[in-house]
Image 1 (cartoon, rainbow, N blue to C red):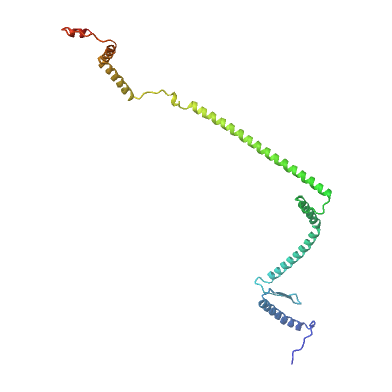
Image 2 (spheres, rainbow, N blue to C red):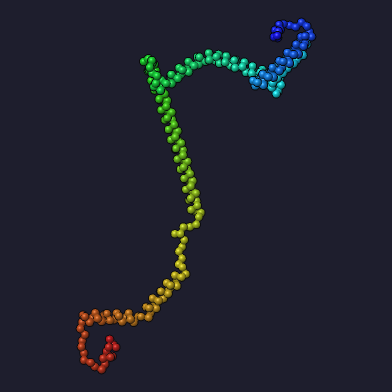
Length: 250
């Protein structure tokens, strides 16, 4: 015989109701445990009896409170995501004017570069030309100002260098005046070895002159007698006894 189908309705008998509650509660806890093990799921079950007593089961190691807290946190995150998506939609709707303004500015920049000129009227082209001309003048003025500033800095550096050069020259002059005299102003003294040599050479010359006075006079006499012998022939006299005295007298 098959098992009969039990009608699902409130059990009027209190004792039968209590027995059925106990059996079904234990079966529910068993099924919850099997579900958590087989499917690696976090399962939390809490059951309140008709008398207000609570029975709970949780598959996590932190208990029922941890499972319910994690579930509550996930619900809050989903709610935040839903709200953020709604806010993004609102932002996109409010950013539409900004997007159009951005596109207009990008088109103006491209036209300043000489691009996207199609669709511009003659007056728009003239206005763009004037704008570019003004921009060019501004660039030239700025360039000139930078060059003038650079020239001014160069002048200041040159002036500073000249001042430093003058200061250095003054310091050099002061050092030259306070320092030792140059070699040209120092009196030259002969070395003690040179003096005996010069004096000895002078003494030798004087001694030579004193020792050979007769030689000098003899040479002069010979040269003069030879000169007069050429000009005038001597008289030939007969030898006599007093020739020695005549030669001596001559």
